[in-house]
Length: 112
Image 1 (cartoon, rainbow, N blue to C red):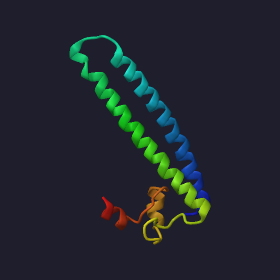
Image 2: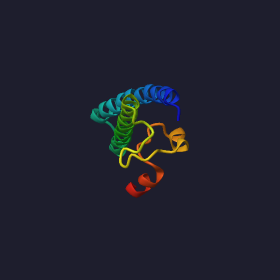
Image 3: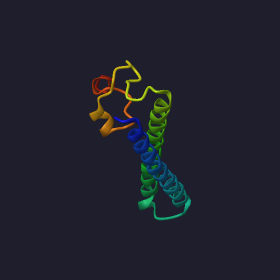
């Protein structure tokens, strides 16, 4: 993938994910406040479930931001498009699907 296009896509995705992270953190905080309010015992699990989902999303968004930041760093260092494990080239089709990809498909399958 062209490095300029990769940087543009990664930067745009980073902004989107950062906004989703802020929104999820706010929702998690709101769910924690609801949990602290007295209410119907039948609904007691509902805020906990929502909070758990929010926290899982926050963790996923933070993980994605980290992956994007690592990809941007590889762009800066001139190693973008190569596996962080083996140094093998990552096919353009994989980078088109996920510009932050760190491994070849084969390596990712072995890790999964």
